[in-house]
Image (cartoon, rainbow, N blue to C red; front, side, top):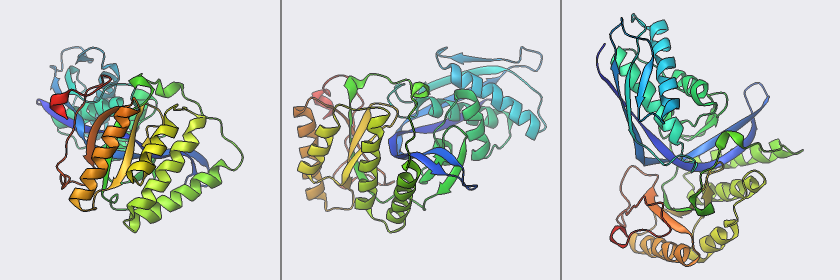
Length: 324
């Protein structure tokens, strides 16, 4: 046993979320998240002596889900490796603001589980990490699987489908809706309607095709339709403004957190630099005019935007001028 470290990214809400058929033909709630490299959670786990109490003490103390996940991870490591049950001290830093729909708790939990496994010298597969995450927080995002586009059953902790190798290159102008107020994810309960499964299975097929054909416009269409459908679950008063801004700036579509208040305008990141920069600048300006808060510009690609990526993370009504 030794000091262990772990890290996990967050995401920018969902590309698609709804009710789908699993491998046995059973209706299952699932989602596909929009990955982003930052913000990320970083965790450090320091095991206690085997004679010390077998509980995890977390700093800061409000990261209780991470502490619970760490204890569950210790139990998994004991079952799978030649280690004794221990407690420990867990430090959790970074991550996203909670309640915005960016997977903050899953990022915390995943980083904590990875830190425990690292400290105890046991390798835990992403599927095991996902199961621990659901046990610790009730529902989970698929950040433990990396940036692959997955249809993921968030309340069951399992992958329903791998939709392709990677998303097309998208540039995203993120903003906040609902004045950035946090949302209680687990309290959301959408009501299924007749025909819902057929609609979401159609979107699933369309997204799979768009990903495998490297079609960013196709991804944008799926994102927009899913955002509209989600108005039944978590209405966003600004949805009309977002759609009009997207049309005015030549965006491919809009994307929202289905259980939070972040949203984004989607652009083709492979577009020539000057044209893309002009569209992004126009989107930022127009969002500001409409009273929405731009938060960051990022790309789904591992490379930096050719336009020069700029990012800020303020949650105040207007970004600080020196960050723009």
